[in-house]
Image (cartoon, rainbow, N blue to C red):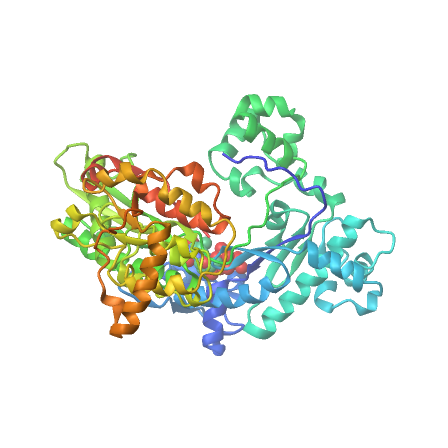
Length: 635
Ligand code: TTP
């Protein structure tokens, strides 16, 4: 359910920019002969000419729609060019479009906070840039307005075509405008400049909405497509919303919108004005009620997030008609392929962006034999994500089996899968430089700490050389518990290399004072003696030579290293610290209150590691923790 956000005190300038028929434009750039031609991008062209996923505006002129298949599009528009989406691993490979989207985002992000909302759309907070323009170079001469800005559609202005450009130029330079409209005018000029740059540098056109909040900007960005922008002055908001059908708003597209129509007789956003806030709260709860009351007035406090990367990664495949999967072997075959792609993508996200995904989710569509119209859905299942293709494949198959078990409800009947997808979500940043800590505060075996990447998949962090986040007294070494070692299990999070004495030495050598990190020491050293006993029975034990001994140890290390000249990277850190000050901890026992004291970047990192460790052991996880989720691929 949507929730009202606090509104900012000052007026903002927000833009929503959406590429025009994006995949088609990408294909037209690859093959310029397609420019200006009716064209569509199709996904699977072996059944009725493939499903259309993007349609050029020329083809739309002939009545071609995205819902059509290729054969139908050819009937409607015989001259249409159908371009097949690239294929890899037997499914659509969207990398080409993803990176084209990133090219655009790099340009759009140059003027303010930028939130990538999908493969081809972003929100921009241009408030600061607009204020700066207003101070330093306000638009004051209609003749000097950039032609692209002069072509803006401004809600509430007369739409007389012959005079439109003149009227818009005058509006953008009005000396008597209030400060909100002046800021909006600057925003419109900035967006026009950005769109011109996008066209020049990428050859892509885009459309945009410019308003005082995200909601309004998004609602109007598609109003005049392609290659145009629309501005919503405050004075035009009520008229615009008065006739806007409720279903046009993303959050009202589903049950909430249907309830407004059926239960309250609300057809347009404007109709909501006849209800008090109390009435809406009574009907839909305090938060949603207030949100509805506010949107009816064009009020929305939602902020533009500073995020250029997706919130999750997903890979899916549909198996229509006769292609439906009917046995576990074929599901496994496809799941393996999807997981391989997912693994590559999260690994590349980790390498390039230092981001780690924590949750793996499996979605499927399935029907029971002879029950094709059954309403029961295959329950989506999630579990903590383990890095490494093999582990993801293994976990995804377990999720599938668990979901199928729930779906079949103990019935021994046939089934057919018509779609499968895997998603990696709950992605968080490893704050730059703090990966030194990751090497010390790590989980136990891969089985019980699935979100932690393989040692082999954790890239060496080049920033380590410049950023050290612990003081000399905070040198830590990690080791798996003895019992785990005896079990011969693999330790995904800890390798001899990571925990090497050499590394301890490396870190001990460069310990600039970093504020606040004494908290780490505090929580690491808490309750050490009690935990010592526990280390043999469960979880990761990180051992730490006490203050005195750590310094001694590091001196000794240095001495040994220079004396032996050996490559210490393979030194196993399994030996227990022996000094009387030695202490150790189990990450399960970290006091969250103490973590709260840490500097934010370290806190985020440690919390990211602690959470997965709070999971029960593997067997219990299989049985209980795999849970229904409603995860979607998000940006
Ligand atoms: P959209 O922005 O929804 O549409 P579009 O860019 O093709 O056209 P418009 O000018 O009307 O905005 O989607 C962006 C791209 O995402 C689109 O080019 C193809 C892809 N896409 C799919 O693959 N499947 C879908 O169901 C939709 C809606 C889009």
